[in-house]
Length: 238
Length: 283
View 1 (cartoon, chains in turn yellow, red):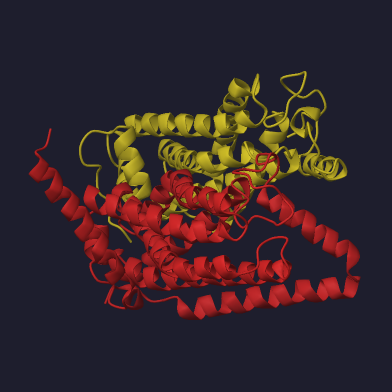
View 2 (cartoon, rainbow over the protein chains, first blue to last red):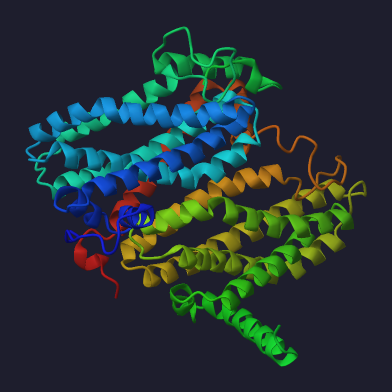
């Protein structure tokens, strides 16, 4: 395992990105031992916001119009809100897993998780954009976005697992359980803040739905329409 | 402003770099490791020139059977497809290279990606005189035997692309394993790049179609509906349509066979990949 050591030089977005990708142990050191934890968290949040905004723009480009700004805002707010409401349970679940981690350090680890996911989402932005300009199928784009989201999120959660192990986690079961919960919460958030891909008269939905039911409905409608013209403007579901 | 001598010297350096590229197809890999570790603009330019020339030559032969103009279009589109794939996946590939522990920075990632496509372009470019001659000598569209010629040319060129793709990957994987910090990291990065490039490349090639040019359709640079659907939706529709026509038992047999193939590949992967730290070290 990579040794824990402080970040060389000042803490900023550049140094935390490099650390997240190459030397996560340095970031974990700053979050757990160093006196620059707050700065590191601020830099991580900045990276997260920028990455999510970039991904949101690619999502917004599918429908255009109001979604140019609504999709990035919804993705940013939704993700940060999901992280915030899951933080207390993370603290409890990590404690159950045998680790003695300060709440602040754990918040930093979660910020790092979101930042790394956002970084990968930013990397996926050109890919998503290519598809958003190539297809009119809401079902296909929704599936692609969810796959991109899950890929990035699972990679980001790798940082949380590594960091928690560095900080003394011995048993992984409870953390895996929390991971599952966090993934479900973020997916539900995408449903609660819909439309993110399509368009709608209302900026937020009036009808409450569970995300699985919602996706089955969207995919069914997509298949029924035969992927015809105007699909991206026909429904404001995804 | 550089002197004419300086410009000639730099052009000579680029030419020398281009001439070093075929050496990377040999089992030893030639200067590949040095190229990845120390990317220079001359090496980048050399790769780009080879991609454009090799891609254009093979692209011309792809479209030639349909019409000379079609050949010209595809000569532009094939290098464009490679470059667009590189640009679209560039950031992601750079991030993955670092995240998967290869030790490559963004410049090294760009260099390595360009090298892999340059090797592919070298092979396809070298095959292009043969495929062009074949297209030139075959009965044209509308002539007697034209339909059969179309099918043979399509098959031959698909085989040429598959051969170039498989061979360049087989050559490039050991180069990447040697250049990365560990063998395992090199493999991970290789397969991550391959998956990403195939995924995006398939879609971009769908957007840029036609390449072969179907006999009954007009010669055009892009189809009118180039941005109306995705490659994967088309595959899905074809599979769904096939599922509707084929007997349910046959369908499930095909799905089962695919599952067995995937399971076999996974098993082979588990056996092939190093599992101990010692195996993981570079030789």
